[in-house]
Structures are given as C-alpha cells and as structure tokens.
Image (cartoon, rainbow, N blue to C red):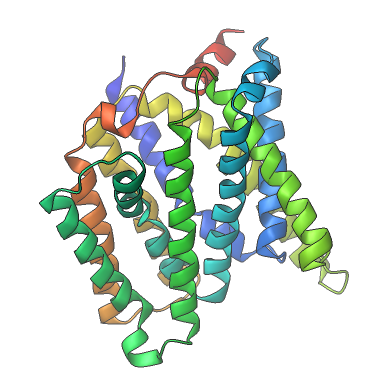
Length: 316
C-alpha cells in the first residue's frame, strides 16, 4: 500500500471540499435549489458507478432501516441548505468555520444519546469553540441582528444536523454504505423538491433575466459541485481514509476550512477582522485538538463498499 499516495489523495480531496463555498458563490439559485440538484445529481453519479461495477441497490436493507434513513435524509437536506445559506447571508469564511464545529456538537449529542461522558479535555474544547463563535460572529461590534451573526447561526445549525446524521447512522444495521447514501440523497431530493415547489415557491431554474454568461457559469459550477464534489470526491475520500491512521485523517481534513478561508479572502475578497480571525483559529484549533486523540475505531474509519468502489471500478 502506497501511504504517501493516499495522503496526497486525501490532501487533494480535502482541499477540493474547501472550494464548495467558492463554487456555491457563483450559482445564482436558492440554497434549497442548490441542495436539490446536488443531492439528485450526486445520487445519480453513485448509482451509475454502482451499475458499472455490476452491483445492485438492496431495497430490502433500505426497508429494514427505513425510519432511520428518513431521519438522516431529512437531516442531510437541512444540513446542506443551512451550509449554503450561511455562505450567502454572511461569507464563505464564517459559514465554513462555524460548520466545522460538527465534532463539538457530536460530543454533546453522544453524551445525551449514547450516555458517553464528556471529559475535561472535551469540555475545554467546547468552551474554547464557543468563545471562538462569539468572536467570529462579531456580535460585540455589529449587534445580534447582523448578517455575520445570522451566518454563524446557519453554520452552527448545519453543523448540528451534520452531527445528527453521524449519530443516527450508528443505528443503521445490515446496510451497505452505497444503499444508505443513495437513499439519503434521493430522500433529500424529494424533500427539497416539495419545499421549493410548495413552501419557498421559487423556480428550480435560473432566472431568465440573468445574462447568458452568468447562467453558463452557474450551470457549470452546479455540475462540478454535484458530480465532482459530491459524487467523485466522496468515493475517493472513503477510499483514502480507510488506509490512513485516524490522526492523519484528522489533520488532513482540516485543510478544507483553511482552503475555504484563503479563497474567501484572496478570491472572493471577503474580509475578517483580527478578532474574527482569532475566533476562527480557536474553533478550528479546539476541534482539531479534540479529534487528534481519537482512535480509528472512534472515528468510524473502516472498509466499506464506497471505499472499494473506485478500485473495483478500475478492475472492470
């Protein structure tokens, strides 16, 4: 096994995930519509990959886990919508940093659901991350009704639903990863279609008044976000993490928010004050510090269908 190659692969994927906010920025659709297309097209990509290697979807395992899958599919839709909404109302930097508080909320949820104890170290990380959020939100200077605070709220709520997905996934039994992901993606698609059509009452398509170049750029970014970020990179991500140590995975996945912060500042020209930047360091530092002491078992890194998907596909 070429561990160097796997580290480079995970580094590339993590950096790619850090560009999600950048691509979202150029898609002139509502957050719900972006989530709809991402789930639909990402799910189609994985189904096609499965068919190409001669596998089938196990409907029986989906039926047996139907209740949990419905919850996780619903949480996935909310998770993505809130993440994209955080990007739109505040900035990619604020949305990304707050969204990366997921491990902190996973600790808190696990304490209630699985009666797992919160250690002194974990409690310290929660406290530091909370201070970081206050600084990132800039609530001291801008007030509680500012877009920065709203972006933090959306990012944090997205992180909470992400943590709920991870928590409820533990309750799934006798189901392949690909079946779980397909159901969650497709259910998210249905939820978003209903929301857009009957609640948001907005179009699924680009506004006709938009210039042709903006429509083309938006459509291209949507395709890249759906097929590349959601489908292709997911396959490679699981393939890489199954071969690396938990500590290596924890460190390399934090390339994601770092890349997002750099793109936010240098490409999108979004600014952060010194205190907001300090808050970002506190949030990312505390979550990373908490993750580094976890074992492979605790992180849930194991070989699965998606982890083998790419290698099997190459053999065909």
